[in-house]
Image (cartoon, rainbow, N blue to C red; front, side, top):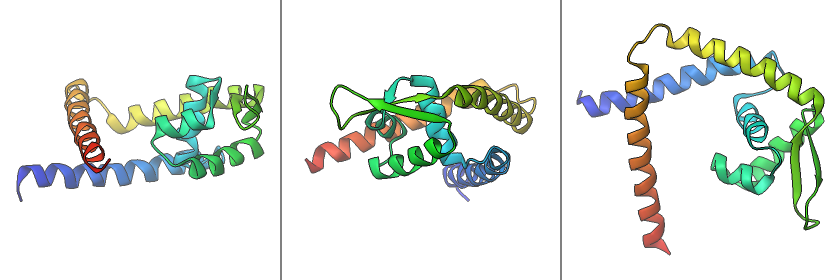
Length: 147
């Protein structure tokens, strides 16, 4: 098998296993990995809006809306009206802030457990960032050609 193909196959397998591990951990907090990513995004950028969350997570607004409603049901986030009545400002509730800190500690510990003592982790991360940027620039070029 060609090295490039092996790399991408391994990357996909790692992602699948990682998501399974994270879902097992996050289920104890009543969240899925997709919900966690949006919850974390709101926590990092609060106050924020649904549009900003969807854009930064690169997901469709209806998908973000569905997850945000679940986070509201769990009393993790709250909404308030923005300048425009259609715009909703998203913030963590007090309970959500406490829950986020607890979950973040668990996630960081799980990530440390998974990555172990890999000394080259920074080098690998930098290389993956280069691949990501290359894929992103190619996507922008493809989108530019279609418009």
